[in-house]
Image (tube, rainbow, N blue to C red):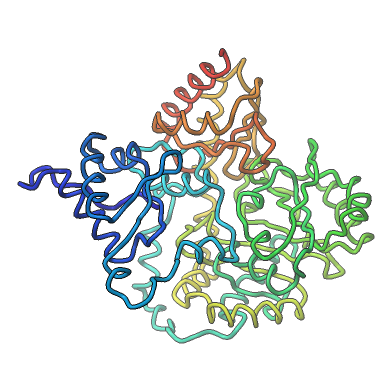
Length: 484
């Protein structure tokens, strides 16, 4: 059950416990909380509703007396009945069983907590993998829809692969990265996550093994697992994925695909050097192992651009290349792309039409304008400066407060610093203690469940003052936990 969007009215003549009673009762009567659903613990409800625990206890006792809820020691409090199930001629649907039997796996509980807490106004977001709203070109975006060129805008469906104008603009944009492709080999997707979903549904058999760098962002989501795939982590070294291990482990695990983030890797921030990229292509070509290259951070370099993408040197159609505007123009745009062999793109376009009938035409129109007009290049130039300042600020704070408790490397671009604690501690306890202190972090165990010594620090969202405040307090918490 999620954080409620309701709080009792302290200026009302009705006592707080009666307001809470009515609120919870309506959740049950409306079918939002179905029979068998677990009610949040008293302490959590009190925090969420900003009242004393005794007030919540009184409200729950009244609900129990009226037969709406029941408690079982050691298990919690559950919805026991509702008006619908009382008056209906048959039993109410057991939605709890439906929810638990759904095909798509639930997020890890810690990921769910992160997703909820990111919307708390009092939280310092040290782990958020998105741009600060201050870095998003909101006013320029408004201007695009107000210009005369907006007369070209259509609200109709686009063709299966997406707007031809946008796909052409993407082809021109990719040429500068060394990637030669045509609009027929480009599929517009609603962000990178949809590209992963389409690949899972359209190209991989159930039970297939997907290789990835370990640690990896892909382990923090359940896109592949929910489609019945198995993930296998390949260790990373100083120069990225250890390509020399691939032949042996491919024979052992019969992998169908390798997912990799060569530039400004999430979560480590590492960038794979040119020679390692060549080796990776050679090994995967020899092993006939297709590559899914995630390049969503590729434009966010600081001093110098990263080596060319793997796709730029792919002459066999080995690489599926994924890009997105979520990390540069804004996550709300929901525009990304997948580049690959035409037969693959045709297959995925067909599945996309079956699932959502095409990405937003408004977003596609705006994205095409950004890429064609030169606005995107201007924006990226300024954005790199801002992000580099944020990175340098974070590094200065780390240098001052984390020497002796952690080590790190300077990222050459992207959003992240991969902080390695010198003493392993419980990541779950650290996460909870930091959250209680108003600091939201991404602990390393969401990228590798065995990890008890890393934290992904993002410098892309929090303002410098918040970065300093949050990192100082986090250092104190780590010190307190390490000294026990």
